Length: 318
Image (tube, rainbow, N blue to C red; front, side):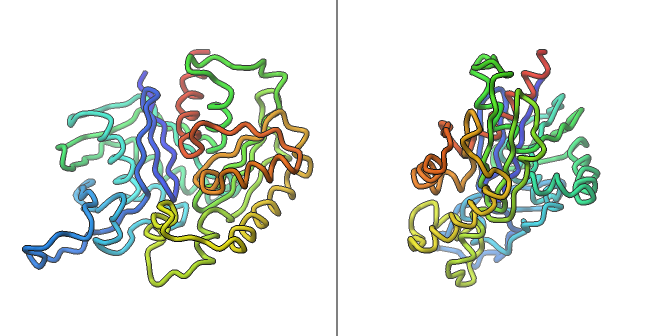
């Protein structure tokens, strides 16, 4: 069975197939057609122009130079054609042009969304469109994608599975002896999730909208797209002040302490997401100072999607 894992973040869209990851910045626009008005000149960016089911999009780094954003920060948009363009652009990097029918698509969704039953059920019905045959074209050629089954998990389940399972998909520890907590700082949300002996601990599940977007809100927007600002932040061309970082970190730990008053109880605290990568050593030391046994993943940004794939493969083999 071929399993595709998708982590549809608002900062990056990540895909894992056969243990190999592909990542695209979640910038997507309807490109503005200027005809030959740029004749003799170089374009401000070389964002990839793709087509999904007859709709054209510019995706990835630099897409913001081609038009207005087609990717809102609302969860319902995760099933939109624009999000399909981001997903398929990653998938197309993994396979040659052709017709593909995959058995399972595993999607990781944010915890605050999953805690809202009404909003989640509406999204689940929309996600079903991903099962249908979709046509995608890009520079490499034309593709058709469809899926037999869609499985939804909370995004932090991926980080947990990536921590728990080795490269051979075997547990690194005796599961019944572990109590692990995942702290996932994405673009839009902070997700908090905990597992005791491999089972979810409801009282330690929560989060809030204090992801990287909260830090960007403190900065000068200057009419720039959020993904352009995020790009500048990643490249260290946009530098928040120490006081802005401290304020953001305070807001993050305000949420953490609401749900995890005693970090020392956990076998491991696993920080993941673009926000964890951005804060780096400052976040690690803050967690340690508050009593956490920190287990920092090799790549905090890709930990969720790799783990989602691992977990689906592990569950299938049991």
